[in-house]
Length: 252
Image (cartoon, rainbow, N blue to C red; front, side, top):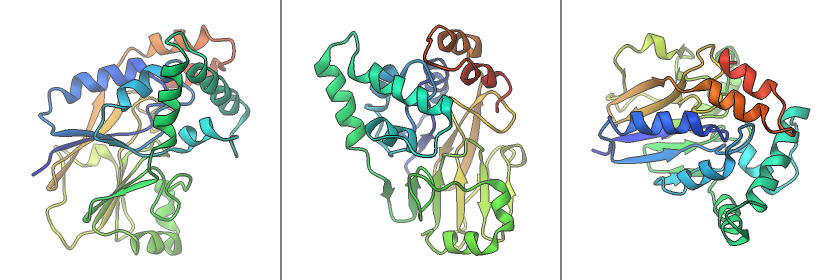
C-alpha cells in the first residue's frame, strides 16, 4: 500500500514549504506529489521549483501556466506577481542554463495524472487547470453531478486553497470534522478531496495544509511556519504587492 503526501498551491512560499517538508519527514510516506501552483504570489519561485523537481510528480497549475503564457483573469497584484516570477526564473543568479531547466520543468508538467482509482488535478476533472470547486458548489447540483460522473473513485484537487472532502451526497466535510482521518476504505464511495494550500491557505487558518493518503484514510495535516519571514521577503520586493504577504497572517 502506497502512502502519499499530497501538497498543492505552494505559491513560491519557501518558508511554508520547508516547514511542510519537515512535517512530511515524520509521516513515513513513500512519495510526495504536488497538485500545482508551485509559483505565483510568493518571493521564492526558483527555490520552490527546485524542490518540486524532486517530487514523484507535479501537476500544472494556473499560475504555473501563466508563467509560460500571458495570464488571464488575474487581478492586478496576481498579474504583477506572475510577471515578476517569470523574470526571476529566467534571469537568476544561478545562470541561464538553470533558468532554462526550471522553465522546461514547468513546460513539461501534465494537466492531470490518472492512477485508476485516484485522479490528481489542480482544478477539476472537467477543467484540470482552471475550474474552481468551492464548498458552496454543493448547492449547485448540476455542476456537482457532472463532476462526480467524471470521478473514478476519488480525485484530489487544489486551486481554491480551501481544504475538505466533497461527498457524493453533496456535503463538504471540513478538516476539523475529520478527526484523526477521513475513512475511504469503502470502494463504493466516490469523493473529491481538496488538499488545501501549503503557501496561501484561505480557510481562515494561516497554517499550511497538506494531505497524507494511504488508500484507506485521508489525513489533513496543518503545519505552522514562519509567516513573518514570508511577509518580510515579499515586502522587500518592489514588484510584489505587500498585501500578498499581509493576508497570510489571516489565512485569507
